[in-house]
Figure 1 (tube, rainbow, N blue to C red):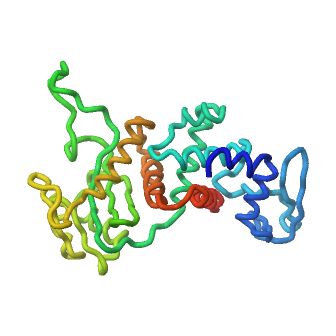
Figure 2 (figure 1 turned 180 degrees about the vertical axis):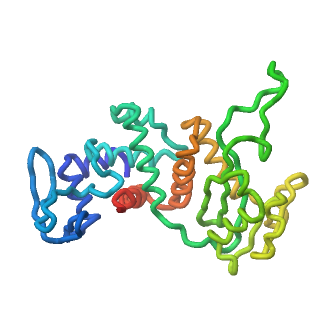
Figure 3 (figure 1 turned 180 degrees about the horizontal axis):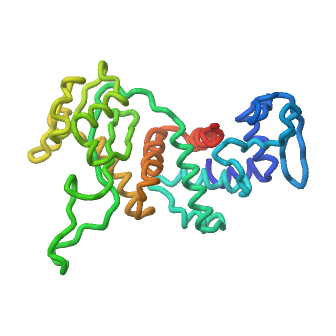
Length: 295
């Protein structure tokens, strides 16, 4: 759903509230505090609230949701969701602030809340041909050979960047999470594999990193040696590498920095967009909006 459609379908605060109430309550309004259905509507100074006769509290449709206690017009929330969902390589909080006339801190908070809503879906276990790999985000750009500093920044597993571990189902979904250097061993990687893959119905393909050396104990396992080749009779990790390219493009082109506190939200956003790539804009918008209303 693009911004033109947002303006047409949700021109007022009331239209936005009614849409959220329809998604959350579907005609059966209950109090988020005591779960009672004994309530009646209140409308005062443009505030669309309800009064609970059981606990005697007033509430709105955004109570106990990601939008709880928001002072931002709901139309701007809807526009922010649309802009972020349609930005394939991500959207910076400063750009969102310019587009919606928001302070930078407010725009940053809105972006992170929307990313949190994208994490609301629990991915089913992946199965089939599964590729696993790691990448590293953050840190400073690598120095060129001509740089005055003779010690270039390290790359790959020798760097101090944040490691991200991911598994992807060919033609299907992806799961990726930030990790720590201590978790990039056989124990940590095998736990990640067992948590996200149906090991009885899958074949795992990785590179020759030693952390994957005993994966055949839990799942059929094939490896590809990138020192000599990148594909051998369908054995490759190119699908996973393609997803990492999207993650890096968002980091290089839009965000430039991932703090450890929010890295999982940025990676979750990339996974959400990849997993919903075959859906239309309206389905994606409704999926995010549903995540925003999760208690």
